[in-house]
Image (tube, rainbow, N blue to C red; front, side):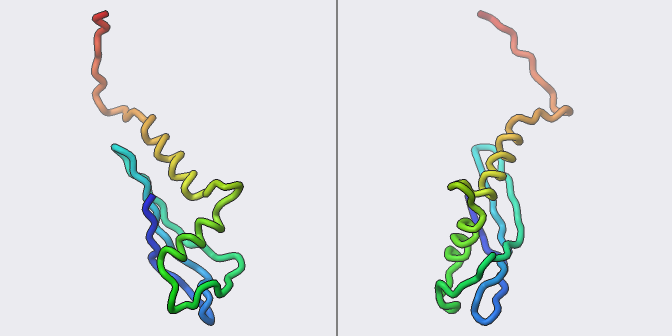
Length: 100
């Protein structure tokens, strides 16, 4: 899973919103999502000048997790599984005879 923070908003040194982009890739497919996360109770855990991108990612993951499951990651994993199952109707299907 690859996270990127594309923008943040802050008030008085507290990060209140963060725009994110997340992608997940398997052997053949990639699924992506983007959004804005509004922090429920912004607090000054790290001085603003010392905040790193990974801090913001970790905070989003923490706030979007329930019962140890991150909802953003879970949705991307479900999309990736669905992408694997879809046969495109316009793709030629080959016939493989059973020679056994």
